[in-house]
Image (cartoon, rainbow, N blue to C red; front, side, top):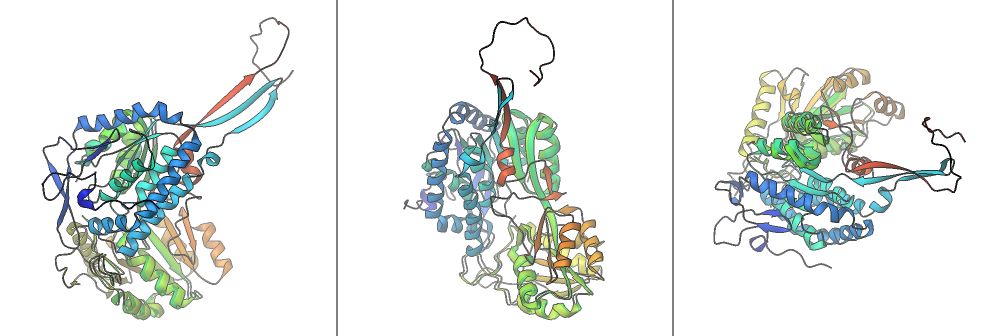
Length: 639
């Protein structure tokens, strides 16, 4: 077993000077180097507001040096046998496993999610590394012999060159691991931009990758700030061939349009407004738990968090229990063992260099829609390959026949896990027939969640990422109340003992939400679950499909006929049947759609390999033949 990483104070990615707090270094050409930037910004613990490190406003020359290092390393790395690259990934996954606890502690310290949730953050990324270990099979080409007289044709998958990834704050380990392990195992080199809000996990992962054997320059890691300039440079740089992005819709579409206009390959995973449709037949207890978990986990800061529940027939039968369960959630520091929710997390000018740089061939981004579309637009305009995973508004539809206990648990878990700071968090539950029969139990289960420091072993929710995030969440809650939504459970005023300055928001349930309300239209990205009413399954599906996002949607029912109709008619890239957060394992792809994704090839799975490679078709002829008169006719397969 590999020895775990040293303590953060001695980490090579942090300055070893007497400065307090320590400064984050840059990984350029295989070395962790001090930035020459004059200005730095603070990385704060969202539970305490303590400054844990400082991150540089990386200079344009430093960005150029990172791209140059990746470009220089590419020829040797692409010619490294795939079996060697696979063995490095095998060693890498061993090192990640040995350092799971330290990675999780760093995530909880910088991002605020509970230790349990942070451990899951690392583990879901680890699964992608494990998938990359099979690259020899995943990257296989095709071969047809004797396609014509003595002519064979085959295709091979070749790496693109320098690729870039732009990451959001809500999954500091998982999203970087979505991006660079697949890319480098395909033979590419990589420039990674982790979020400036919580860069530590990405820097630790980079350190482990070097220890695993990645050659110098194959992975370069710079947390640039301000972000717009760096994003545009990524989109515009001619050396960058592909851009991968996860984040907001505005950024994602900017990245998609800019990078694709430059001819780059782009993938943008963006925002969401995830819905759940609850039919009257839904299993009550399971549905309530699912609503609470999906709506409030990670303080709602997940792109797959459940934001809206549409109850066929109305939400009234569900409301009391929803309030009860949401009220039981413990809001505390992510370090607290009893925490269910931690705090939420909390500028721009980072990405233009990545979009513009000629050496970067692909850009991968996860984050907001504003950033994602900026990156997609700018990088694709430079001819780069771009993927932008952006915002979401994930829905669940609950039918009256749903298994009650399982559905309740699923709603709670998908709605409130990670304090809702997941792109696949459940944000909306649509109850066919209404939410009233579900409300008491939803309140009961949500109320039982422990909000505390993410380090607390019993914490269900930690803080959200920043004061600004908390203020925005509270503003959207108030907007809903002002426009007629019933506040079944209010988590705005929660105070966590010993963490009074933390960015905590408790589980919140809003019923009678309408599609024209701001709280419904906007991705809340916090531990807030919206309850909506639908008269029928058709009505519920229309509610979900009118929403602009398409990350994920789920249904809770015991009817196979209803489930099949939902699966066919729903307009979402990832569909759950009695599963509130339908995130696929790495051998399938993360397939957000509509405003939640920009690009033509999604993250990980087969699409991930396709994104980070290009097909070369070779036609060859080896035969003995007599001399013939030259022919200018079109070659055909006819003798």
